[in-house]
Length: 117
Image 1 (cartoon, rainbow, N blue to C red):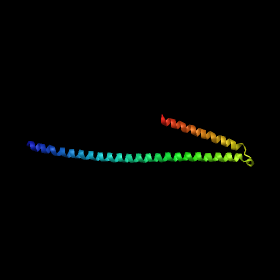
Image 2 (image 1 turned 120 degrees about the vertical axis):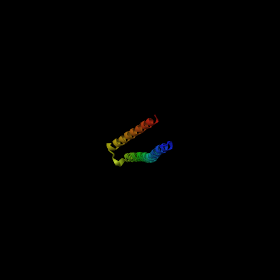
Image 3 (image 1 turned 135 degrees about the vertical axis):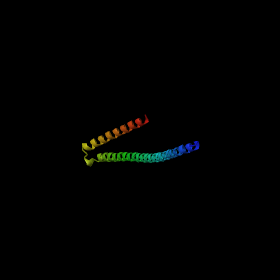
Image 4 (image 1 turned 30 degrees about the horizontal axis):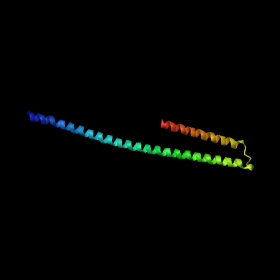
C-alpha cells in the first residue's frame, strides 16, 4: 500500500465521523434555540398573567373600599334620621368597618415598605 492509499483509507472514515459530529452539533443547537424560544414565550405569558392578576387585585381592592365608603355613608345618614331608631348594631358595624379599614391601610403600608427595602 502506498502512502496515498493509506491516507485516503483513513480519511474517508474521518470525514464521515466529522460530518456526523457536525450534523449532531447542528441538531443540538437547533433544539436548544427552539427550547430557548419556548422558554421565553412561557415566561412572557407568565409575566402577562401576573400583570393581569395584579390589576385585578388592585381593582378588587378599589371596589371593596368603594363599597365600604358607601356603606359607612349610608349608616351615618340612617343614624341621623330620628325615626330610624338605630340600635347598637349600627354603631358596632361602623366601629368594625373603621377597624378593618385601619388594618387594611396598615397592611398596605407594611407591604409598601417591604417592597422598598
